[in-house]
Length: 259
Image 1 (cartoon, rainbow, N blue to C red):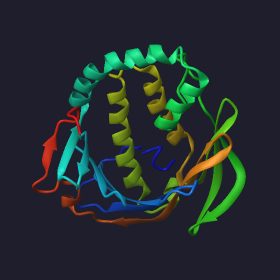
Image 2 (tube, helix red, strand yellow):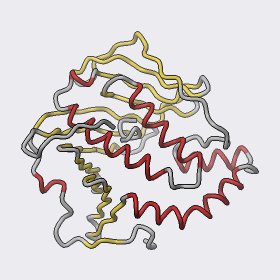
Image 3 (cartoon, rainbow, N blue to C red):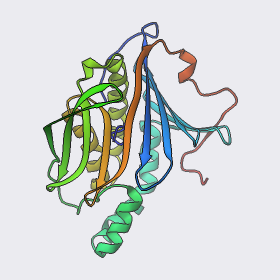
Image 4 (cartoon, rainbow, N blue to C red):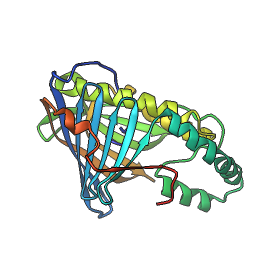
């Protein structure tokens, strides 16, 4: 959930100030491969690299850039482009919303598996219950306390949390993350799908409510841990401005164009 929560908090600094580098590892607990994620944050900007699939995401100037190194291309997502995309997708989302009303439990479960999240039934959903427990742990040298997230009484996530001020560089990271989360939330408002908006808002609310930085998080499905993300290291360092630039020679693509 480190990056389910994906992916939250606002601070403005100059590029001359030290930034932050965060290393995390995400594991599929059903036997899938581990994914290494490197995140750099500085001056309200963010860069996320994922291996082994070699994808890169850059956030700056209120725009999210999804970069494909395979074909040396990138897609830019800002409020204007998301509004245009919403205008094209909304008719299909309306049809999906109607179809969901008549889905069998099996069909709904299949769709939720594809989306990686529970789909609300259309009505407003109760806020998740976020509870700080008395369980403590030490993960990769970081002392932490477990927080549980429950929806309708069912455990969906557990996170071992460290106070943000206990991790050097966390303020810079949280500043950039919050700035990006505001953009994502604003983008979702143009989508004609209440359940998508609820999912986005829930992630923001959950992040703000856990009270710190998770050093390990586990996502549960039907009472069993499905995936796990752990913090390997976090450090304060000056990040070169070029880390937040689109690589030279890469071509911009329309995000609605067929792949």
